[in-house]
Image (cartoon, rainbow, N blue to C red; front, side, top):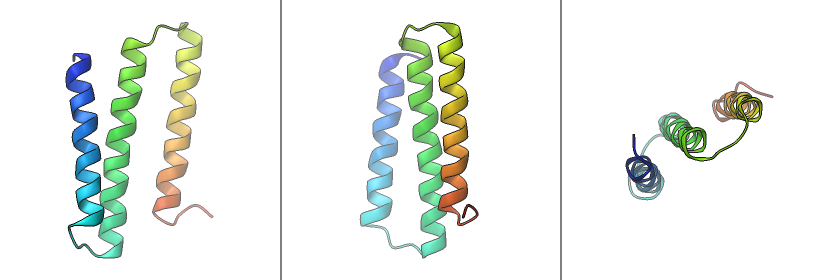
Amino acid sequence: MSFTYLLLALIIVGILGWLMNTHIPLAGRIKAIVNVVLALTAVGIALEIINAYVPMAGIIKAILNVVVVAETCVGVLDALGLWK
């Protein structure tokens, strides 16, 4: 994918998140799940942009990927109330 499409997708996810949190009434648990899905999409797109367009050594890129995936897992568990 080109950088433009990835950036456009990231902007669309941001707008959807803003709309879901401000204008569309949802139950508390459903809103949390929608926010988790939007956050996972945004993190995936951002990581793809970094992996494709930021030049860095392979080992640093691998470490960055592991750290981002681990932090995302902790964030999802925390958002769903499973991490204490």
